[in-house]
Amino acid sequence: MAQNLYSPRVRMGNWNEDIYLEEELMKDFLEKRDKGQLLIQRNRRLKENLLRPMQLSISEDGYVHCGDKVMLVNSDYPETEAHLVLGGDLSLCMTPDEIQAHLSDELEVPCGLSAAQTKIPVGRNTFTILSEDRNAMGQVLRYGQNFCLAITGGFEGKMLYLSSDHRTLLKSSKRSWLQEVYLTDEVSYLNCWQAAFLDPQLRLEYEGYPIPANAKVIINHCHTNRGLAAHRHLFLSTYFGKEAEVAAHTHLDSHRVEKPRNHWMLVTGNPRKDSSTMLDLRKPLAEDSRALEQATQALEQAVDPGVQ
Image (cartoon, rainbow, N blue to C red; front, side, top):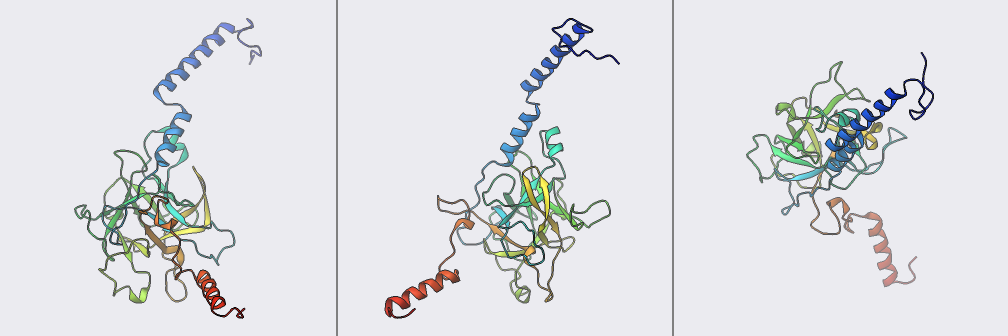
């Protein structure tokens, strides 16, 4: 097939058709630009919504309440089962599919999840705690109580719920092939979760007690009785870079105790203006063993200068 190697300005071959084709392409481009349907425009809107700064709820009594806006954070710990891991505090984030996000202006359903290295509350990692009957707003959340975790992702009029279901051959997590965790707009029993006390020997005694804010808990799925887990050693290539996989699976050690992969904190806002979350606060001197040892040595040297 013959091909015109010259530009439309050179009047050889089908030069008139090439000119009209360029005009049609320019008209189509201008029309999509005016309607905001260009790929770069959709990309910009998606990032503006997902990365929109959010304000976390501030706990006045030290407990978590229904209706609070929190971050789910898997705190940093030394991983001994894998060499290459994603370190630092990881927060649970919604991760829409990049291709589907460019084809539509709304969030896809179901939507994926991941764990990212971010401590700043934004649209993609700020969850709202809702009671099972949606009528207990403002009440204290307790151990063993069913609740839902909802997220808007920075979009208005769109509410997605953290859900999970039994693993099948066609439905499982991407890397570990364990039970999948996803976001959906359907309200059902698959949206219900429970928080359990960290120490299994005291778990029954703490049943019904209020859940402290910014304390480590175990988050179990009510329907499947699987714990929410962050797999730091399994990486996902997402729209925002390299992040860790999130699944529903209870990882137990030799003593039948949940591993740090299942430890989560419901992080609330910081009343101080210089930081946004309670994670930004420094540990008290009594909790920092190294600082305590340094203070003890300084005190001994002040009392007796001969002490080394």
